[in-house]
Amino acid sequence: MATFRDLLSAAKSEINEVDTDGASSAIAEGALVLDVREPDEFEEGALQNAIHIPRGHLEAQIEGRIVDKSAAIVAYCAGGVRSAFAAKTLGELGYTNVVSMEGGYGRWKDEGRDWKKPVTLTPEQNNRYKRHLLLPEVGVAGQTKLLDAKVLMLGAGGLGSPAALYLAAAGVGTIGIVDMDDVDSSNLQRQILHNIDRIGDRKVDSAKKTLTMLNPDVNVVTYDTRLDASNIMDILEGYDVVVDGADNFPSRYLLNDASVKLGIPVVHGSIFRFEGMVSVFHPTAGPTYRDMVPEPPPAELAPSCAEAGVLGVLPGIIGSIQALETIKVILDLGEPLIGRILTVDTNDMEFRVFNLKPNPENEVTYENRDRIEIKELDGLCAPGLAAPH
Image (tube, rainbow, N blue to C red):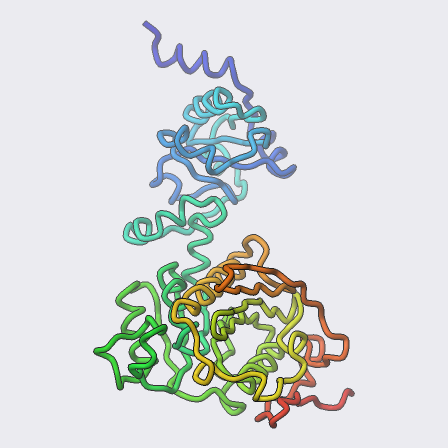
């Protein structure tokens, strides 16, 4: 019967091993780093940007974490034994460019090479966000970004309700909410943050109760006020993303000008009857609201939802997409709707995407941010710009 040493010798005869110098060179050339130690070992310290899959879970998880089987991989453990067996297993699974690091993490650290103490989550957070952690594009690092992120919701109504719920559920650590209305029974057809027991309560208070009951990790900051030129800069400053659920043009233009001046991306959503749209206005990476709508249309051509009505489920669709785009911006994930407009017609269930380019006549840009003056807007919502120096 084979002994452990026999099995280890057999494994090493079938794999490629490198010393720490060879591993360092491979990593510098772009090789992925795979840590196969146990969680408690990993939490004490690891190589930079290591993908952590304990040896006992390797077969079950590796193909979901490293899809490209031709990718260069440096596997390591504490001393080079488990990583040798891991490299053999990876070869059997079809991975063609795997090496095991001799001496493992112990030798790497003793030689004074770069390492870090990985960011970790609590056991409760590991359980709550388990489905996120299984996504290679999110993982612990991405979830930590979400927990550190600050998102401001402009409105706790139809769009703000689903967006805030999904952002809170996703673990966005700080959610600010600006709203100055009371909960009304006519809101409940679409504003799912609230319920009949809260009719007459302030919307920000109702929203905070719902979100904190959904996820105690989330710090909900309330602003029971009307957003205007006197307070918008103070409120926006410090947030990473703004989710725009405003229902009037002056608020949208005011938000645009302040967000451009501060360089904060805005995830815009709007709804009308059976139709909606979403776009990401990123001042440092693409067009903004004034590029899309240089000036507001006449009031008779743009009635509000209170005047024209809205299908109750439509804000749920648009607000959920806003939450998704917000997460993509925070995690730098995929292709956010920067320079694109997504439209939804729920009657025909048709989704269409239109490209949006910067308007060369629009002077409210991040490059001109020092000239932007935040002021109350007139009926035409004309921007305030100081004369160029």
